[in-house]
Length: 525
Image 1: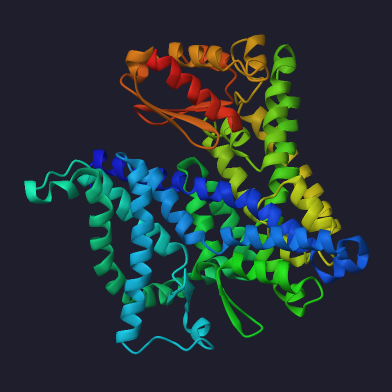
Image 2 (image 1 turned 60 degrees about the vertical axis):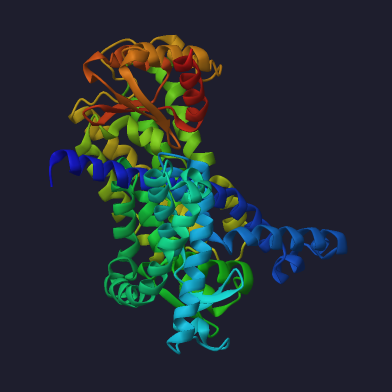
């Protein structure tokens, strides 16, 4: 494979990973609401707080739970739309519409296949053979895979056929209208082949799942790889695979088989509760792949790294870097976005990032030994309060003790290596940090930030394309030599790096979308 094709493939994988951010971003707040409602509706919670048994309050809680659960019951179609929107370069809106058409078609075709091969299971046994109801159709429970395939096909069709010209008699069906039609046709053979491939894939994933699902050390390996994939934007893909497919294991709970980590957690956390024997048996393992182990990073490791950076910063820059570091730490603490701080040292010292990944894996291993059982998806302080303190048998005190050990280890390791390798982490730059750099983001001065970004990227004529992910601007350039990194830092960004020759990432944290909007406006004149 040529370097150009390899780079194109790499960019495609990164774009695919970023496309999962849209549905995942929806799952986080909806999951929080669903989690709160499910927790408050538990019988043991009602016993502790009798007011929860009031008719009106009970109706509100149960209603909100049912409303939010519809999102989690349709994760694959959310993935289909998210991938179509993220991957399509042309006619994104039509691609999203076509992805839904493709998803419906795929599941119906698989239903036809199962019927005609005599493998359509009875309602009582369909869960045991990997079948289930999807939007009223009994089909294979391919979960996220069916959504990902539908989204990818729709995006590819949109890019290839958005300008399709047909003979006059069929001209009405050409152009944009052809996209959902062609997607529909493409999904038919896929739906006939997928059941065969799916059975082989299940066997393969089960054969390698021991890597991630091995008791105690499996979650450590998973978490090390999860951190290591962050620079490539692939950590979301790994998380999705473990959460929603056989790679995360299959779990038999009260006679029903649950595929992946998250469905099993949902059943135990929201339906069975802490008094269930499955809680003690499975929750320490399951939650070590979710928010419970993530809390070690957001609540302890990131603050420790931030403090190490602050204590190793130069005195002349300490006042300015304090705001930057504090913002990065709070972003992780409150919002589970760790990238701004991670990127502040990732590309100036890949070896330190490697140490960070290994430490994250090793320091996660004790989680299961300590029987910690804290959900949910995200690892914020809010999750700790709701799913740690408000639930019984979570062993939240053990998480704090393990977190303190993590804090101490990460603080001293980072402090040592920052000084040993003389790294230019925030506050240790070779140039003075302008005071305006720390106030622009605080003041939400998006036009001025955009002006600084565009000017120091070589001007509008040097900028080919601008997009953003959850925390960073991603910009294609004509000539990377025109970039002034020193001047670019005056924008208040947390990090700058080149993942490829003509592509730059500028880290702004959760405000990046507003920066991107201002940059787009400036470029349009």
